[in-house]
Image (cartoon, rainbow over all chains, first blue to last red; front, side):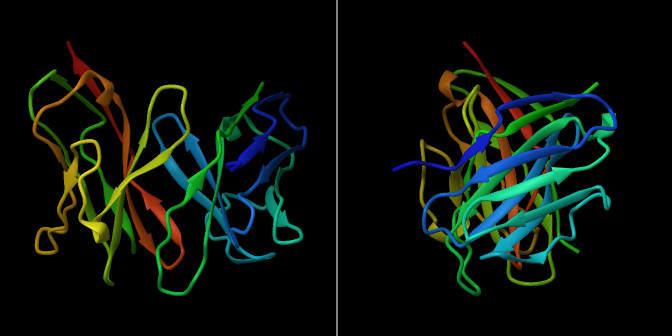
Length: 116
Length: 107
């Protein structure tokens, strides 16, 4: 079946502009995660969705970052007033979700964001 | 606090030699630990998890709670093992990743 998809695959934007990154999880996966992969920083957790709610948004680096999920499916990560330090690969992952069970997370191909 | 440490950013070994990628963790509860791998131009994918205690592509990893380690090992490296490897700890719902180790297998 189809895996996690993300769009766009690449995004170049000017400093100060807003961007929206989209994630389509695997059908039926109730948990959705956003991570950021930067050179020298490894993989950084941003936010976790359980259905449409976000019980853990502790990783969002500033109030310029926000995310939403609708219909328990598609999620959008929005970065307002982009800065050069926002340049990174943004990864989305999805999984099944039950209490106290750690399911495998399936990752999308990522969106490479470059802020000029 | 949850933390995963991979002390080696780069590791280079010859084909046929043993490989060990180090991972240490800090977590107050009972950890769920994973190794994820990213091959060139492919997406990040699960390699193995401690709870299943299985060998995948010849790799094994043993959870050592006394040393808080979850090192990844393979007795004989192959060229196709060249990739970026991430150790990860699942606490609550999120995965906390180490910084990753880029493994290069030389012919």
